[in-house]
Each structure stands twice: as structure tokens, then as C-alpha cells.
Image (cartoon, rainbow, N blue to C red; front, side):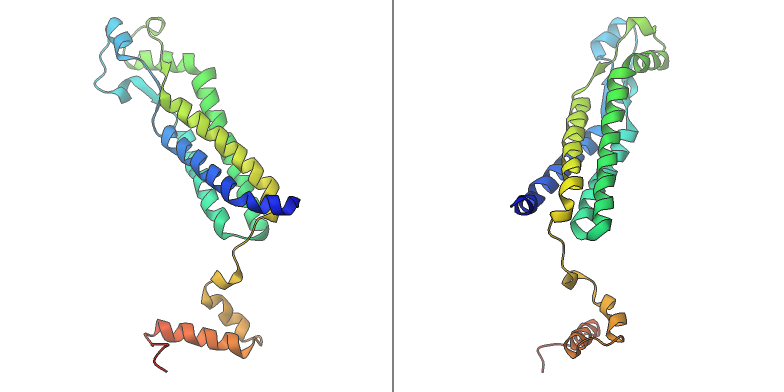
Length: 202
């Protein structure tokens, strides 16, 4: 019964991981901390664009792309490789969460000071605020973290892609080792299709 529940969780968990990693990837490539335009003007500063008065966390975006790739790879792998990929997705999601928390909550004062210095302003006169993208990235990281944790725990019971989806060339080496004639004919059929033959012509 427990294994059946784990198998049913495959789709929802993968979907959750893709959504969370995708949200973190989008948010991670946007402005996380920014000085509001009104605050900047009151302090006598001018910034031509939002990017000039904002801070991004590129590491969070990069880790989110790694996590997103892991979910894609997890769909097409089997055995211990799939477990390693699930663990990598967990590490990447934890990394996203750590980067956003440290950059957006622990070192936000330092970021405000650096932004003010970059704009030629007094650091005590301006304060960078958290953008909505920071919250998107943080929520996405949490969702991806939960999904990856579930994947690491449940992946041994998840359904795997059958060997029938492997490339036909993978059977070429085993045919010589004494495979059944039917499998040899399947390989011949693939070769015939590659050469432009019509399997329905016979």
C-alpha cells in the first residue's frame, strides 16, 4: 500500500519540483533588492533604470536552473543515477533558499550601503527594499526544496522508463552476444528505416 502511494506521488511531486524550480529561476534572474525611486529622488540621486538602483542574486538563478534541469533528467533516468539526480536537486534547492535568505535578509544592509556608494549617496540616507521577485524566488525555493526532499525519499518506488525507449543502437552490441532472432529483426528494421526503407512495402 505504501509503495502504491509512493508511485501515485510521482506525477504531483515532479510537477511541484518543476513549478518551484521554474519560479525560483525566474525570480532569481530579477532584481531582489532595490532602492525605491521616491527614496532615491529624496536623497538627491538619479538612476536611469531600475537595474541601476537594484541588486540581483545571480547565484540563486543559476542554482534554480540546475534544479530545473535535474527534474528533467529525473524523468528519463533509472536506478542509482536517478537517486543521485534527486539528491542533486535537493542540494540545488537548498542552495537557492540559502542564497535568497542570506542576501535578502542577513546582508541586506550591506547591499543598501553598496548600492548607495555606487550611486554616490550617503548609505544612511537610503535603504534598499525587498522586491516581489525576492519573495517569488524564496517561495519557489521552498517548494522545490520540499519536492526534492520527497523525491529523495520516494524515488526508489517510482515507475521507471522501460528499456524499450533506449536507442536501438544500444542493442547492437548485445545482439552479437546471442540475443533472440526477434530482437535481431527489430534492429534490422531500425537500420532499414535509417536507410529510407519502407517497412510496409513487404
